[in-house]
Structures are given as structure tokens and as C-alpha cells.
Amino acid sequence: MNWTWLRRLGWPLLFNCVAVLVSGHAALNALSSRDFFWAVVFALIASAFLVGVLLHVAQHCLAGLVNHRCSAGGIYLFAAFTTALTVDDLMYMAEAGGRPYSGWVRALSTASLLGSLVLGFAFLTVLVKPRYGYIAALLGASLSWPCFAYLAWNLPWRDFIWLVTVHWDGELQVAAVFSLATGTVYSLVQLRRMQRTSAATHNTAEREQLNSPKLAG
Image (cartoon, rainbow, N blue to C red):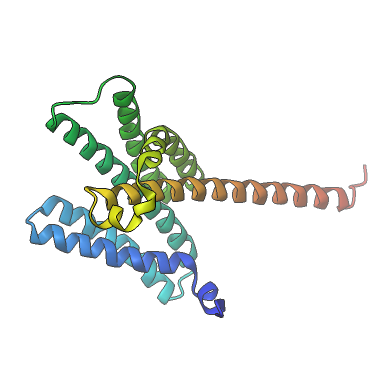
């Protein structure tokens, strides 16, 4: 299959289009449930991604910058939501069953919730200062990974269809693990790319300085 058209269109644009549909659907569901707070939140998120799509359609000079930042923000926001909801549900069910988390399990859960909060901060930061956003996302992921590594190890992956269709919160837990992995890998790749670009720019500047004619004393 020829993917040239897809590369020309741009993965960030496709991501933003999907994000508009997903967040818009979430806003409609929240509105139908009369949950007006989340309806407004998801509507604002959908509007932000829609701005990126419209800029690309209009071939605006800021389209690439906005779409890449919206994509990064979307990844971190989704990871923050799914990880926080997963841990909160697990803690709620443990308390409802009369066996609340304690000891190291509670410590991992608390650290994961803190990591979700940092990922939410990374969502805001990457829209303004991408480098700091990537670093914040890695910090948040490092806080959440101990809990989700333990969770992922105990998930019944061999019964994947049952896990995401029948298992209580299975779909949410799988989404949390994969979104956390995606956010971690994306941050590492982007930081590595920025480091290479910075090194290449520095080397080019040094070569130009060495090749420039010396001023007569």
C-alpha cells in the first residue's frame, strides 16, 4: 500500500481529526448525562484540536506547529485521564469490598495519581514550551509506571477479547497502559530529536565560524 499521501497529509493532522471526533463524542455523552462540567471540558478540548485542523486546511504558516503541539497535548491528556480513572476505580472497588489498599500498594497508587496530575500539567506545558512539556511527561510517567507495570503484569492478556469486552474496567485498564507507554516513548523520541537538532545547529555554527575569513587586526 502506498502511504505517500498519508505522510504528505501528516500524522499530527490525522491524530487531531480523530481527537476532535473522540472528544466531541465525549462532550455529547456528558451533555446527555447532564454532566455540564465535563461537557464544557471536552467541548473545549475538541475546539482546540479543531483549530489545528482548520489551520492545516487553510495552509496557515502555524499549522504544523499547532498540530504537533496539540498531538503531544492530546497524548498526555489521554494518559492523565485513563491512568487517574483506572487507579481511582481500583481504590474505590477495594474500599467498597472492605479491603482498602495499604502499605506499598497504596503507596504505588498514590504515586500513580500524582503522576497523572503531572501528566495533566505536561498537557498544558507542552502547548507553550514543548521541551519542558516532554520532561514533565517523563516525570509523570515515571511516577505512574510502577503501579501500571504491576497492573499490566497481572492482566489476562491471553484472553484479550474478554479483557476489553467483558472484564470489569478491562478496556480502561488496557487504554491506560497503552496510553502511558505511548506518552513515554513519544516524549523520549521528541527529546532525542530536539537534542540532535540542537547538536546539528551547534556544529553548523562552529563550522561557519571556522570557515569565515578572519578580520585583519
